[in-house]
Image (cartoon, rainbow, N blue to C red; front, side):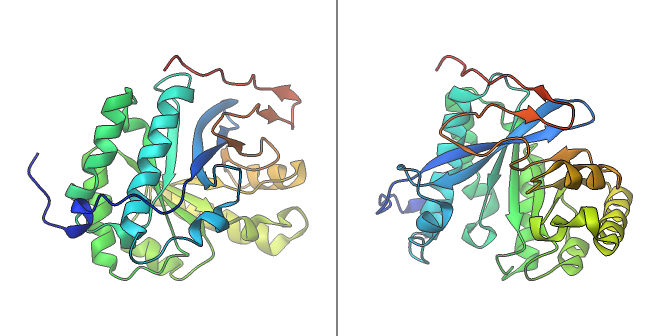
Length: 262
């Protein structure tokens, strides 16, 4: 590979703080299986994402974004039971200088640990203002060229809403938990989410409901046609491990996923 011209790729100064990843499952209800796991940044002693992100600034943003990807893939290579389980990684669009250059560390990490990079999904969030929408479009195009999935996180919150969705269509759309909270007793929320789900299907986008906490929410969301779910109803994130997962609506426990040999 040729050398990148961006300064971020040349800067190898270590981050001034340590972190690891917690993993939370994404459940395919229709097929009654674990679809994948989202990697969530945590402090090594279990500190929350806010503690870690509070130490990220304009100087170290690129290094942090790259280090998160590599750490998530390294752990997935050890913990995941097979190469059919997907890994979802959050990324910062504003930290990507040149898409084709900035993806190299990800590809190299996946190759190094033997993790199929086609099983990786990158989530970008509405909560980070898109400084250059055309740049984000180039990132998504580059990621798709390599076989990565893309997801729009926190849909229904943040800066752009439908305008952002109109600019680029990801493979998945993750509904913000505040949008689904209380859906079981809210006809308005039920109607809004049903319409969003229908719109997404017409655009070829799969909808995932995150932050699901009880069976009433699950039942109401399933009625709108959603099959992918994430939340405390199934499992809380586990620090550098895969948690036991329970599909409580039918009281069938998933077995704890045992790590593959390193």
